[in-house]
Length: 221
Image 1: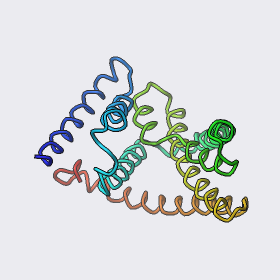
Image 2: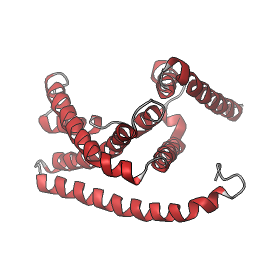
Image 3: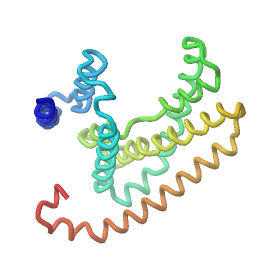
Image 4: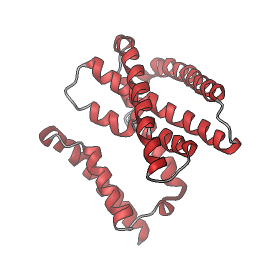
């Protein structure tokens, strides 16, 4: 019976996702926000579902969802828009990340009574803008292509900064010493490696995408 309820709940959430997406065009309330509210209600508020109930499936499903969202957003970008918006997206990412650190670190020290290094760890974790939230909302807003591309790039770049700097500050917390060169070097290496992998994957998909679209059930594929 539990399996039946799980399948029923998953189908109901998919139906709600399509319903909220249709309502967005009329009421301008982000569909992602409504789904987040449902998640809060069935999770922390009522306790019907806990992270332990999802197990490894929840983590894998979250990663697959993020990959699909980023892939779909990348298909809608053009090289001209990327070239024009790369600088704005980078500046926006750096400014927002530094501003988040400037707010979170003092609050975590004064209110949560953390150490400064612990505050930087928390600030790095909270300093990013989730791609899973930003991209679906931005794709439906009446924005210029340059502004939309800049926001998409910012959400993607901020995820990288969150991971790299959070791991760097955690390492500094373990060794009781901040190593700016190590953190900066790790960040640059991570961005370069991601760029190389992304470029190889982009050329691969550019060559096979038209062939994939000719396959039966290509959307599901």
